[in-house]
Image (cartoon, rainbow, N blue to C red; front, side, top):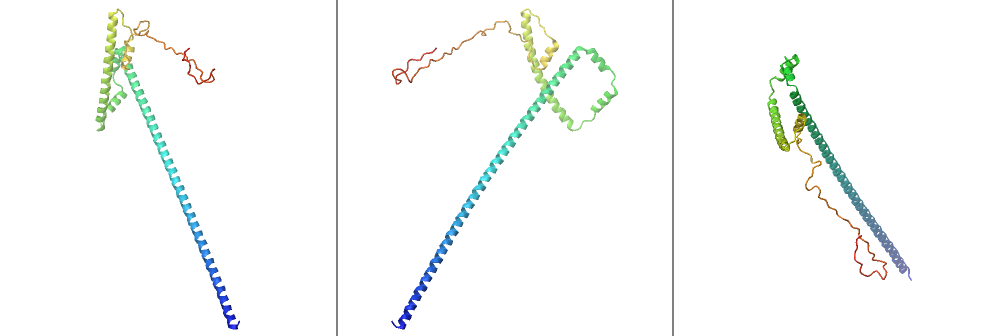
Length: 253
């Protein structure tokens, strides 16, 4: 082999080595690029998962906050309703107490007037004291523009209350007269304290009703007994001769 051929062979070998190194470098670069792409994809997927998880956590926190807010609103509404009901009950109780005190004062004043008319006349005929004159002068001042309206409202309420009381009193008087008429026809005598009757009328309590104690009342002796019998148990399993047979007739004790 001549020198030229050897030189040519050496060049070919060098070219093959260079090409092999180039191919290896290309493969390494491709491998690095693919690895980088995979790493980037993994990072992107991990970031997406983290974002989804954070979004789900935020939604869950928001739902919890909404539920807590709704619960607080319901509790506030319930407390408000309870307070309103309590105030309404207190107001009604105060109104009832005031009405009861008013009725009691009216009955007391009426009773005192009926028992001592002369004393009341002498007391009213007495000359007024300086405190009474000042009190009367204070009450006879020129009314403000709002007083007629209040007086008109008060007078309408008092008139309505008087009409209701008069209707109740008339009804109670009718019942009492009817009972007294019956007692007179039967030969009995009407008994009772006038002050107590007047008090009962003012409070709207019916008076003059008779008692049925010791008197026969038709239909009061009707009665009945409901007898409850106990059922006799019947055995289905573990019977003599086998259990797959019809049960005997049911009996009651």
